[in-house]
Length: 405
Image (tube, rainbow, N blue to C red; front, side, top):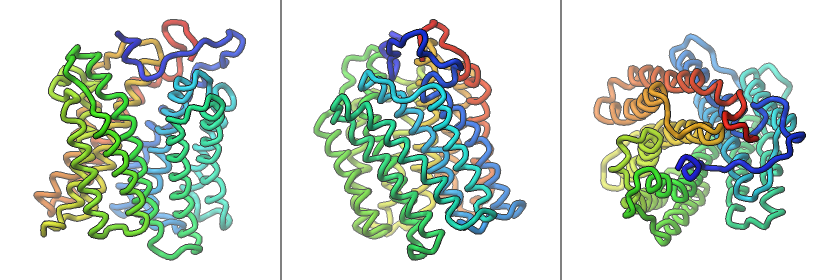
């Protein structure tokens, strides 16, 4: 059963082709570790900036820097680790391992460094360095996909390209090439793109994972609802690109939220209470309809601060889904049983509470907003510190079954 629940299976590899260091054996290894460490550091730094203890740089304003690094720093690192591993399985051809993989991870890390000290560097240097990562990732992913004519997954290349375009728009705004306000539109579209990716991957894996783990045969997915959800999510990307934060955008968001909820109705969420690796994914998925419905509430005269719907999708959905997938993929591809440690169950609980604190508490008690920021930040940081402690050996040591990867 452990093999059937693994997201990506290991491929045969000649002994002499194996990387010298285990951390370079698969894309998830360096990128998940870097993403978790970065996530545990970046939120406390942000709270120090909000509290006035640290001064933000001048390249991006404080809020744009926070959005940029959470999206193009943290989230993109997790996406890179996931896709580098998954594409190898989908095509039965390796993406990148060994020294090239470590160099690719180093480029992502260099991007984080230059964004931290962007105001101290010559004009254009932060943009050039930070923008280099996603095109290179796209090339690495495209080679096996194109070579095997794996057209079903060409959409992943479109996701990487869309994220690059959004990142480019943020840098061009910072450099004064694009009008003020374009940067905000860019990161809102980037979040839409990540939500689209979550919806696409969730439809493939969550019913299967739940059915295999629980043995409940009535867990099924609807191909029609899956297609409608993804088409509407792609439409939301387009609408937010042209008419962001408008009534048409709210209407499309409402449609996506309702479809996302409807397609998951028969995925067996009620059977996951005893399976932390499952329920954390369902919690993360549930935040998508919640966040999109919060966007739509002004349509019926209930104004909701846009930050709450935004963080339902980010701190709620992206936070829970990425943490859950990083935990699951690392276990499956290190030859371990798909059973999280008690510490990781607490990590999942902390992340779930972080979303609730960040979104639902201010929704009913706005005067507590600044307090909830600190509580959310502490819970988020705790969740990733636990992940780093528990998974650093898993990510840096060879598979326990002796297989490559």
